[in-house]
Length: 94
Figure (cartoon, rainbow, N blue to C red):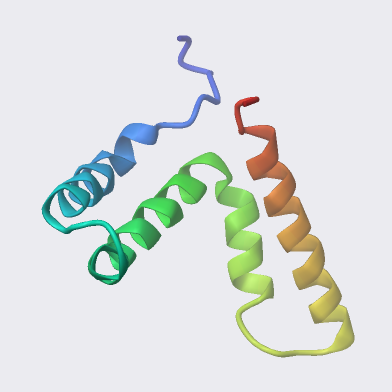
């Protein structure tokens, strides 16, 4: 891969993936696992989104952080749509 490549560095999220896998290994399936592993699942998801769509995530964080005018709500909604489109563009076909 060339130095100018825009391929995301998913390795940054490896520690969250390992921790979540370990949590799933240790805790039985069901509500106990959901409760015990929830924070790790969220951390892994946030890391992956930050790696894959950093600009779009930052826009959502800044524009959707608090209530505001109709314009700000509209900008927030547009930022959320842009983030969803970015994430969809990185999904593999099933």
